[in-house]
Image (cartoon, rainbow, N blue to C red; front, side, top):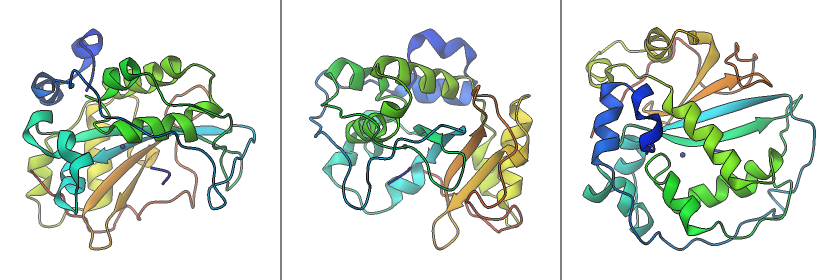
Length: 235
């Protein structure tokens, strides 16, 4: 799947709504075990030039409303707190329709690396997956990959999602415009919105250039149209 708390050092840059999430999050002392991942016949190794990047955020209440298992206990149970937007990952994109993936063989991440990111990406196996599939195409150092994506996430400010969720006429464009209004360097056309089949908010994908600065998303790069009706599930 090409799709995901924040350490104390970046908390000063985070709005109050996210502060509350961070303060509620206590990463487990012993992190869950993960399995190594690598290319498969359906998901082959692909080493191609990087043309841009995507920062993907998942709306956690939607994930937790679906079918979950023991692996979701931290994210969806009381121990992890009430998560809103969580970091899915930082993805390198190609110059065409395909993207680089699984560029280098990777073993299991050290537990301290996983633990340092569990309050941003509250799934140990997803952290492992993001490094294997995407991070290995950007650097040879897991710490550098996660530090960059975590800091980018930590600078984002989010609107009042509960207020948006109460609107009966909400569209995908309304959501991206509301996020853009909280972030001076963003505009609505620099984000893509994905939804479930029945129209619930799933993810926000932020389009970035090769310098990791936000840029207008390319036509046909995925997501629903800005005028598409959308619903937001709240905890």
